[in-house]
Length: 404
Image (tube, rainbow, N blue to C red; front, side, top):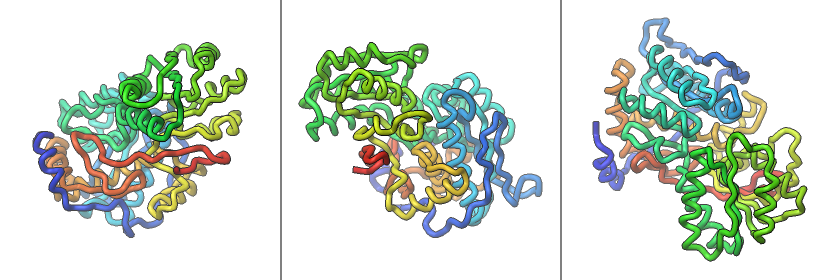
């Protein structure tokens, strides 16, 4: 397999641009929007049952449990991409068979899901969705030499091997860029941080944020943690942030907990500037949450559904028609991930009769020639598994996500 060191040398010479959809997409087939505890499989018209070769792409993520909203979005985003690609003629003329397995956000169950997909004949993995399961499964794909792209696994270790890459931003990138944006735009002089010390995603962002804060014209005056076992009552953390005189509260965690923090701030009459990470995408849809409390919340993200970009609007329209809701960044990153798989396979000239390992070698070798235009960024390339793309700055304005 071509080593990443060689890939780094080749990245500078990239000339091939493989667009995501262009004009090749057509009306997607009807899909089932209901997530179930069983796998969801898309059978191509040239299915394995007909004896004709197909590319077998697997997906893993939580479609039940506390993080099901993220996994379901990924499952749906993959489905739309698969439907589009199959309707447009497939990859190198071959259709895709797609199977998605539930891991409930658990590492052990993610490995079980991976083994189920491997027994099914999976050749490429899109997943997993959350960082800890992704790290666990990456060990398996590394041992099997299977190509893996995670839409949303942000921990550094998710892409530590040459067969793995990600579509989303890494934890350090989010933390560093957030601190830079706050400092360079004079958003605060005193910053408080609340983070989830039991979560690698939250911890990784916080650590990078704190490191970069030393270079910025603001001071971190309060740092308070919570864990998965204590994420329903934020009264102490908010009180200490308020007592420290912080004029900005940095929240590197997911929107479910963020909605509780914002409600607690309102209860205590604490009105700092709120700044989050990409996990904030979805806060406006939290049940029984007063979205007025999120007004002015700013965060970095790779995707804004209200973008005027034609590719984004086509994706949003199809997603809303299929699932009755607006796609979040998890769905968008998943959608793009499938098209990156397509781009790598086409650049490699690969065929589905190849073993998963041979296919992986071919795709990894082809990635330095891939420049991708999608719904989460344009002219994206990869270095050591990390996407080179600019983050968007999103703010809640009049109850809607608005790109700044």
